[in-house]
Length: 264
Image 1 (spheres, rainbow, N blue to C red):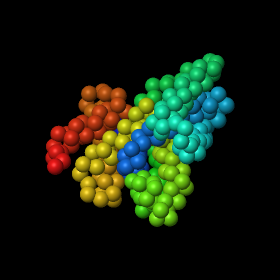
Image 2 (cartoon, helix red, strand yellow):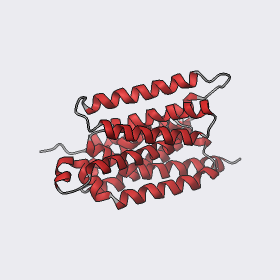
Image 3 (cartoon, one colour):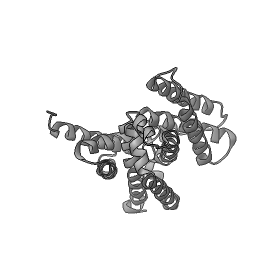
Image 4 (cartoon, rainbow, N blue to C red):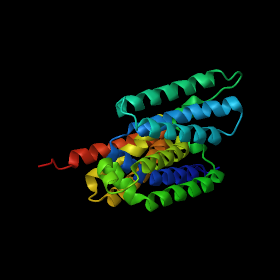
């Protein structure tokens, strides 16, 4: 197998994931709730553990658990007893720990947890790309369809509610979309780094864009460049691919921060 045959499915899958993460990550940055992504991504490992324990396809367990977590988060966010960051931290760490505990009960099975925690993009096969493409197009289609409401409710829920926008329904929709993206992004950067792929490109784009649409598109482009740079670094220096992608994105954030003009 040539180097190109090994790398092109990883490149295509990584760029597809980055394109979807751009607008969703922008929405998370506007909401100032990056822990949404952490909670969902950590729940993905619980889905992996349950899939192995019940001997069902992995994607079924991951999607089911992430969607259940999305609904639970949407319901709990309506209750004022706990601050949002406290609630999300509890759920994120609990889901991750429970996932590790579940996998420990599986006798005679050796699971490469590093691949789940930090990604295994090079294991992506050409046959994995059509479902990933269909999912990416579907998610982006829903985002474009509901873009105005998602942006308004992310920037200011109270004002959006006054304008008649169904903020609770859109919050749940955003979490469901994030759950689906987390399922796909596990292969790219793993459950511990998914939030970085969502948030870092959006944070860079925020410094460069003037409108929400520009920010979402720019974030997708920055994520794609990070995937390219991570793959190049992995090929050149034998780096772990998932962390290399995140380091590339973090490097762009550092450069953008240094070059940004101080606010007046």
